[in-house]
Image 1 (cartoon, one colour):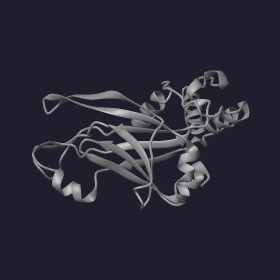
Image 2: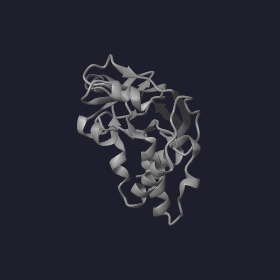
Image 3: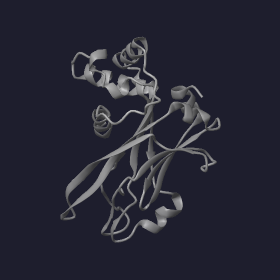
Image 4: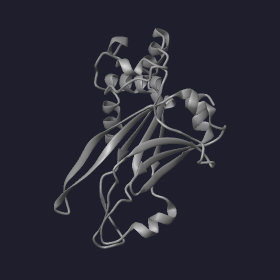
Length: 218
């Protein structure tokens, strides 16, 4: 819940909007707000845990730090982000209207965020600590044909740190990216693969086709 809230609050930060993005109508924004206030915001959101590959998992764990940490990933249309903000406002007994919606969410884009997991001590290897690697890019791919990919139109990161882990401060980052929904729709029907690109390799999770249809209609 803590990481969901962090991603939610960070989603209100403005980043550049693609010039081709269409504006959401007042009715569409009101519908998103109503979904959040009625507790239906999760229907507009895809959530999964991007993890290290199965083969890499057995190679990575050793004494000291390794970059095998996972990421909580959220993907939704901008209407889903509006619904999340409305739900959070209601939880805190705060009013929320069209005037409270950030300008960069009033367009028909898709938003993907990745929140790194906290460092973890290994339960099997003494002295091994799993850390999330720095995020370099977020990508949406067709599954299983990973060669068909959609890259973001905008991408930004924010530092994250954990003090006093094995006597030192460990650092990573969280990331946020925007995508054109039309490009996602052009990917072949079926499952999607959400990829967090890092210097240590990609961390991925698979979105079932039913969740893709639920959120994006295809």
